[in-house]
Image (tube, rainbow, N blue to C red):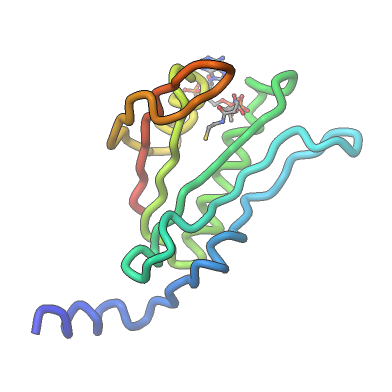
Length: 135
Ligand SMILES: CC(C)(COP(=O)(O)OP(=O)(O)OC[C@H]1O[C@@H](n2cnc3c(N)ncnc32)[C@H](O)[C@@H]1OP(=O)(O)O)[C@@H](O)C(=O)NCCC(=O)NCCS
């Protein structure tokens, strides 16, 4: 009964297929024909239960950081995700990265997890923190 009621409540949503969620773009920033930043989201997991959930990525070229480009791109991505009925966004941040933490928290994300030494970059193990936003 509980499941049926829940299904009825969600019926108006158009769940995204995993393939579609690989193509949710917040856009790219450009200066003089050169890409200076981009933001996109991809399926968090391919299983059906997670069809309303995505993982986000934002990147700004080093010499263009601190000018508001990341904030603008991430806001556009979140707006696009809302339009597509995405419910949950999570962003993984290789730590330490104060700029990325500040950007996520400015947009309402809250930390939800910390994976120790899950990544390997530039010859060393890195911790990755996860931040989440419910839309
Ligand atoms: C993280 C990143 C996307 C931020 O983009 P940006 O265009 O520099 O960010 P903005 O200018 O919009 O600023 C966003 C916030 O970060 C803060 N910030 C920017 N550079 C910072 C720095 N070096 N140290 C601390 N905070 C910083 C800004 O003050 C702002 O916070 P506020 O609103 O509380 O003042 C960019 O630094 C980047 O691409 N880094 C490398 C890749 C990366 O880490 N991607 C994120 C992993 S998902």
